[in-house]
Image (cartoon, rainbow, N blue to C red; front, top):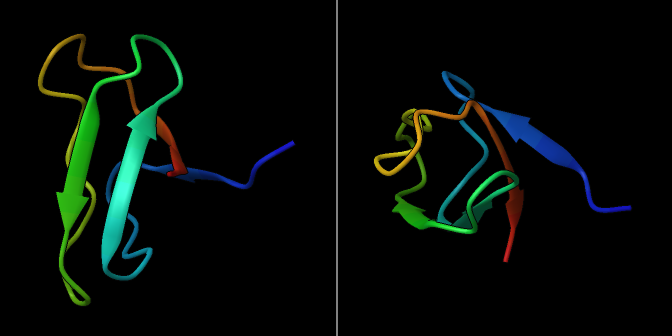
Length: 47
């Protein structure tokens, strides 16, 4: 199973996929992961 990252964490630059609706969110190296813009879920996996 993929490592789950949660909203508010700084997982590093890359694209993350919502574990609920599969919406993709891209963040830079020092950005905090936001809640999913589509469903407000708080858990993501790295694409």
